[in-house]
Length: 277
Image (cartoon, rainbow, N blue to C red; front, side, top):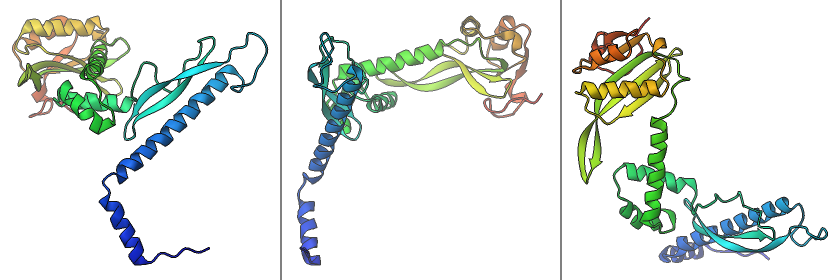
């Protein structure tokens, strides 16, 4: 049987759809339902593989088998919150790998939170925006934990081992970064060290919030680089601007390294190119 629809009828139909504000909400809900079914099926298959047999298949006395389950809410970017039924086994040994353990959302929302936090949005503001952005209201305490994880990652990076880096050129300078401090944006001095390897690769070796005019701050900064494994015997040239006390402290901490002012290599700018051999 052929069904024919006139152009006028089709136009009227689409006009009616456009008048219904919940049309796209219904579409999103249908997407969530399908994702829930998919993830639940995936977890069931994982359990089957873990047990080595189908759900209702018996393999003698003492064999481990499914023992109910529980629902777990999980948030996906651009999908929202979905409810996945996760099975349990009798022996209590099964742990799903489909959903991250002790996590209520995928990595993408966590990354979004970190980026917005770095731009200056408060944790409470992010909590208010979370339902609109990710389909689930995330308490500000959870967002604070995400930001703590970010801070911990930065701390591990700042304290990483440098013993495997063969640094040939070392560039040091004090710069200012605009940072939010106690509700105000301030220009904070930061000591920076950039190394260039024998292959010409540039690496940020160290960052420290300290007074760039203080010789003591520079000494502590250089000692930290060496403590983390920087091999000064492989460095042939240190490049720096004429900050008070910087060159003197550098020569004391790296006595075998030649020093050259940055402007004598490339006038007008400190960062960028490697000096010519």
